[in-house]
Image (cartoon, rainbow, N blue to C red; front, side):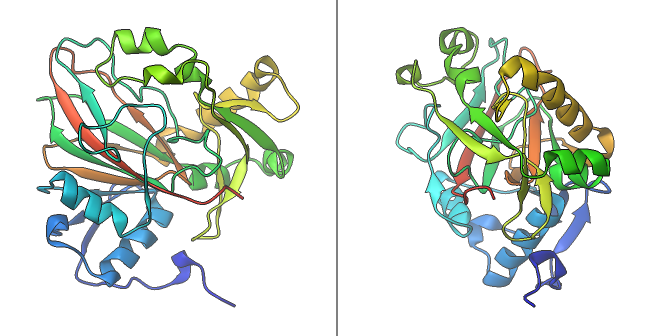
Length: 290
């Protein structure tokens, strides 16, 4: 029988790998991503993504080209369909909160672009400017969250599907753009993206099941209205964001986070009013959830 990704031994013993918590997140130190990494390191990052959900790197110095080169080692790059891009770089999304802005983006527990038929494998966020305090991001490991569900709830969710939609963003486009520097594309008004996905998806590399719901984009369970779906959706999100499944990352300039959208949710804290924060995000294409 072919072993899963998590059953294979680590491919590189030279990496300085430091888990963030008992279930989620790992820092990899002493790696210069701009200088390029070999196939063994790529394989090890893939293994850590599947196991820990998010991999962090510190003290990087990346240009848009080297950021893109690193991302392309893990698959084709896809552009965000609803947000504007960095001028001259259509595959890089700016995540910017200016000092005068009241709101950021990502301040709900979510998985990126789950409203796509083929949601992304992962996202790679690079810190170009950070506030002196605040602006942390939290992640939760949806594999660990699924494992901790009662067996009766697992049985109820098995085989169930949910509708994911971007209407949380596009139905409130003008309202959201009014208070944010990271802006939704004006041409998205009235153009909903949606897709049906399993509530429990099996990771295509690790083989492990994970909850696949999130607060803003999981709109309703199949055969149920939004109102009928909210109690169960809220229950699952509250369960999945229990502290024992999570990690919290303190950004520094040059930090990079690479997270697995197949088995995590994340949340961006908006607690740095009066300061500027600028990040660049590249997204990697992924498979249809199954």
